[in-house]
Image (cartoon, rainbow, N blue to C red):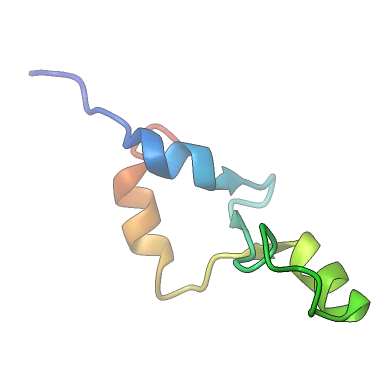
Length: 66
């Protein structure tokens, strides 16, 4: 039986926390930042958790995470 491959695009975007949740970056913090407020940019700079409805799909893309 062949090994299950990891989707590399997903592996670069998601990290598993110690408690088993997936972290992700927030969208909208790469460019066009001049007109965004400092508060908004601070909020976008942090990491967020993947929503529980999407966790199933992320787990399928990252089969070797526990």
